[in-house]
Image (cartoon, rainbow, N blue to C red; front, side, top):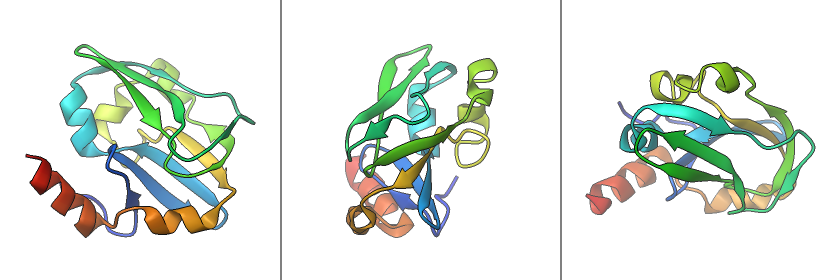
Length: 128
């Protein structure tokens, strides 16, 4: 699956969809395929504040437990509660139903440091 245009990406395999002063964050299809079957997602509390690169929570799969890092600084305004009952949404629809949190962006300039879809795909190609 290719990575959607218009999103920003990190080298830790998170994606960011900017919607005004908010950012929807999840993990990429590449990340979920490396993890395998996701069995649990630890979500942060609404209202929690994170700096760029802080751990937002963890994703547990049959193979491993991985941190999800915040690509940018912000305050959690929404968490994907559906993942509590259906953590496999991360596997089924990493860029849609499998989103993890929505942050209120506190440092918009940090978005400039993230990768475009093309840059992320080049990074993946170099990583293999």
